Image (cartoon, rainbow, N blue to C red; front, side):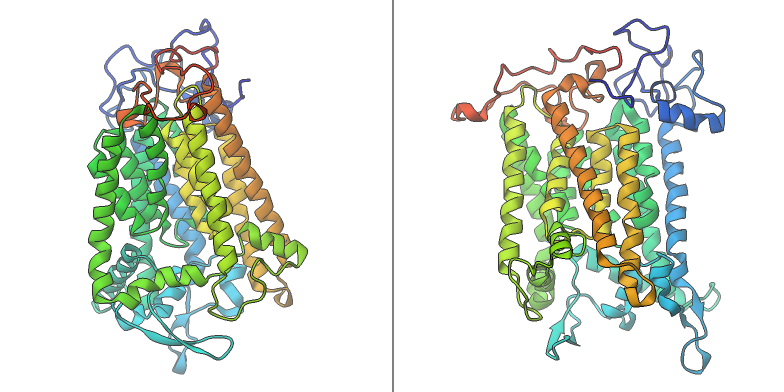
Length: 542
């Protein structure tokens, strides 16, 4: 069944006819596929939006001839605009006022501005909470913190190594800026936020660039990454764009058949946030099915080496500080955005472990969350091995990361950025993805007003958790549609026009060669379909 977001041929084209975008050599950014997707002609939403700039590209336009405003540069420019909007949504939280001792300048968070203005960012409070304002080196500096029950606990930097070192580097730049009298002045924390934001913006541009290159002939799909509502809300909420940049660049290196470089990038991403390392799982089962395990071992060895190279020195020098990230994640309870808290919110359930003392680990919750994610991994692996045509890398990566977020005890709101480039590459249905991203971004509003508190004219918890349910359902719908396209590759927009897997690298166009010891139930239920056999579009709108 064709979706109205799918490609369609031009009005005068015969079913199955190819539309060649330009009779002459294209600009330098073209892919090997000489037929470029033209969303102004093929996508109703884009066609309507294009009326703002004069309408869809004309039938006789020489597409691909421009040497300056190439599709990639236009997409990156769009990303800069939306990153600017993202900074503006956080700007209210770096306003200054003479509210300190003797009228000294300080941050103006009066009236719970961080919630009422929807501008909260972890970056601002972490500057003091992680003792960065003291010039402290992460993982070495410790401090005492009094818990709600009166106990005193020794604390350290709570982020993975590269995220912690990034904060330290931004602090060093901010303090250096603050010490130069002829530069525009501001509070150190304000300078720190802007330095952090600049680096995160560059990281998101890398994410957009890698997605655009990986999209191949469908380069305009990357505009959804550049102009996502989630960028406006969460690009500067935490440090997650650093991880998406490593993940995107790692997948691009894999697509270009450079598994060692891909492993290094994914390993560095895993030293920033966990999720880039999850991408090794889909590549494992796909390489197993294609008989390309040597490439996967090289990838994984490089990832492990890169992760150890940045973690081991700090683990040896400051073992207590280095372990803090892992300790906190083990004792952390269900996050407000997790499905476990949603259930508690509506039922009054106290969780698998009941009421715990401060610092006590929720052992049962940790176990259940781990087992559910293990079930997701098994399910994704089963789909990858038994589908008649080998799934694309992006499809499995999206399913695994989405499953991780849905079953994990923590889904911080900015984690949704992890899904944006993967969703665009896995399921490029523009209106559908835009609807999900909008729903996910809007969860931020009731979340902030829930934190404000009912006593301060905020919202009850159930208003917030109800929107979380809607968000989770939207992600589940995307997962179902991805699985549907895996089993019905004729519906896959990416695989139209004779394409197999733009992100596949050594897997792209490879024949199936599973190990002989594979049991029958782990082999395709029907005769495996080679990519060459399924390359011819079966639908005029394919």
